[in-house]
Length: 410
Ligand SMILES: Nc1nc2c(ncn2[C@@H]2O[C@H](COP(=O)(O)OP(=O)(O)OP(=O)(O)O)[C@@H](O)[C@H]2O)c(=O)[nH]1
Ligand SMILES: [Mg+2]
Image (cartoon, rainbow, N blue to C red; front, side):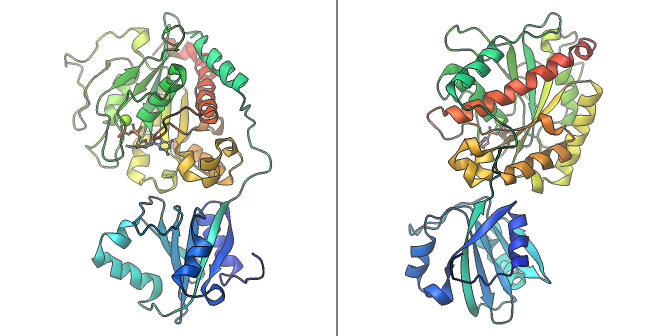
C-alpha cells in the first residue's frame, strides 16, 4: 500500500475481506492525503474494478459500501446486483445487501443511514480500497485450455455410448432457482456444437422466463446428427409455495411421465388422469442425470425455503438412484479475475469457497460440483468458456455410466 497508512485496522480489513470471499485490499485513495476533491477521487479511483469505499465520522462510526462496478465520470447510475453497505459494530461488520435500500426507498434510506453512521455525516476521513481477488499459485484442478482439448472434449461427448439398455440418448434434467442460467446452459452447449452463439431457449432476468418443460436435442454442425445427450429445461424454482416449478412435478418428469412442451402449473402438479400424462413411459423418456443449476453469486444468500425445496428434490432423486451434479453458473460475475480470464477459474479462492458451499448446501459431493460461465451477452464463442462448459458435460457422463444398473429399474 505504499507509504499511505490505511485507517482500517487489520482486523477490519480481515472482516471485510472474508465478507468478499478471500480478497486483498489495496488503498487507492485517502481524502486526508489526496484531497477532498472530486477530481482527486476520480483520478485515483476511476476504472479500478471492484472497490470498497469507507467513511469515518467524528462519532467513531466506520461504514461504507462495496461496488463491483468501476467508478467513472459518466454521471449515470450504475446497476450493481453485488453492491452492499456495511458498518462496524463492536468489531463485527454488519452487511446490508441490495442497492434498493439506498436508491429506491427514501423512507428506509433514513433508517439504513441511521444504522450505518448514527445520523452523523461529519466525515473525518474517507478511503477507497481496490478489491483484488486472491488467486492460488496452482489451480485446484488442472484443465487443458488448448484447441486440441476442446476437440477431444467434443469428440468424447459425440461418441459417448449410453450403456442403459434401449436408450440412445441420455437425458439431463436441469433444476434450479429462477434466473440461475438453466436455459442459458442449454443455449451455450447448443452454441458450442453449432459453432456459433445460438439463442434458442428464451432467457431473461426478471420473473420465471421458462414456464414449459423443454427438451433440447444438440446437433454437431458437421453431421447434423443429434448428440447422445438431451438437455431438459424446466421452470425456475421459487422461494414461495405455489410459485415457480412445483416440486411434485419433478418425480413425474424423472419417471418420464411429462413430455416435451408441457406447460407447468405452479399450483397443481400434473395428475395421472390428465391427457398430458404419459402413462407408460419408454426408457428414453426417463431422466438419467440431474444437474442443479445454481448462481455462484446467490448461493450464500439462498433463502431457507428455497433450500428446503432443493433438499426435498434431492431426497427424491437420491432415492431413485440418479446421479446428481451442480453447475455453478455466473462465475464471471462472482470473481473479477475470472471475468477477465476464464482460465483462472480454478485459481480463484472465491470461486473455490463458492464450490464448497454449493456442495454443502446441495448435498452433492465436491467432485460433482463444477463451475461454468454461460453465454449471455456475447456474440462470439470463446475457447476457454467452451472448454469449461464441455468439461462440465463430460464430467456428468461417467457418473451416468456407473449408475446404469439402477436406472434400468426406475
Ligand atoms: N454473466 C453471466 N450471465 C449469465 C450466466 N448464465 C445466465 N446468465 C444470465 O442470467 C439471466 C438468466 O438466465 P436464464 O438462462 O434465463 O436463467 P433460467 O435459469 O433459465 O431462468 P428461468 O427460466 O426464469 O428459471 C440471463 O440474463 C442470462 O443472460 C453466466 O454464466 N454468466
Ligand atoms: Mg429458463
